[in-house]
Image (cartoon, rainbow, N blue to C red; front, side, top):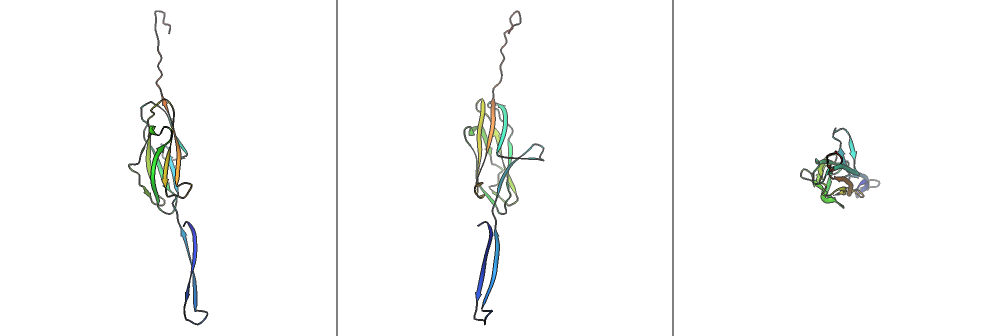
Length: 166
């Protein structure tokens, strides 16, 4: 279990009192993992903590660059990841790539996954990332929202008649 733990050991012998019972204390600390997910800005200096990431507007069926999200283990034991998936209304528009992801993250270390956005329709597109791990509740299911917009090209039809009117 996590946190401070204490116990004691009694050694009982046939020695004369008071040495017939010898007691000593035991103390220890049960560690635990702790998950934190961040997206580092392009300059590499600042961390934008999730709960959501905004992809902006992109043309329908076009794909953004993959965005890197780091999973940090700020705890003091290994973090075991079970799954990283995109779920929700438009989850098919958000491609999760875990090719380089280590599913075991040592204490004080990190791993990463990427997400790219390809809107399949015009307008607001939403989903969320769902990360399942052995981090203590409530972070054993870590989620954050993804948002993006499918843009449509603007078409302006002009009829240049003899007088130039539209």
